[in-house]
Amino acid sequence: MVANGFIFTSGQIPAITSLDDQPGTFEGQVRQTIENLRAVLEAAGSDLEHVVKVNTYLTSQDQLKEYNRVYAEYFGPAKPARTSVCVSLWGVALEIECVAVLASQTAITTSMNGATS
Image (tube, rainbow, N blue to C red; front, top):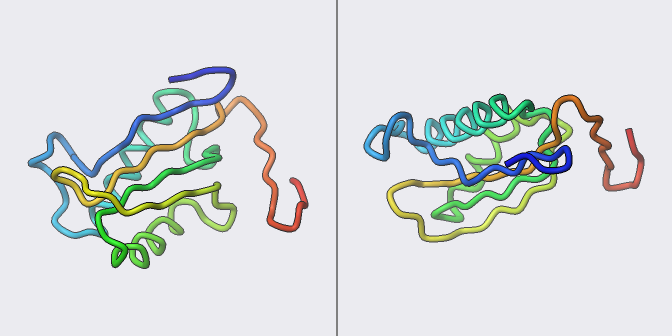
C-alpha cells in the first residue's frame, strides 16, 4: 500500500512459488524473504535503500545472530529502525514487513547521536 509518499508492505515470507517451495537453510530463507521484499518495494516504486522501518518475526531467538549477518549484507551501515520478535509461525522460519519511502522522495536519516544527513 502506498500512502503519503510511504510504502507499507505486508509480511513477506521465504516462499519462492508456494509454501512448499522454500530454500532449505535458514540463511537461504532470510535471503529469499528479503528478495521477495525487494520485489514488492520495486513494484511500488522504491527499493531497500529507502526502507525506514522493518518488523521481523523469527521462530527462535537462536536465529537472530545469523539473521543479523544476512540482514547487514542487504541493508549496509545505514540500517533502518528495526524490531525483531520471536513468534510461532506456520510453515516458515521468518516473516518480514517494512515501511519505505518512495524512491522519488528524500529520506532523512538520523543517527543515534542526532546527526542528520
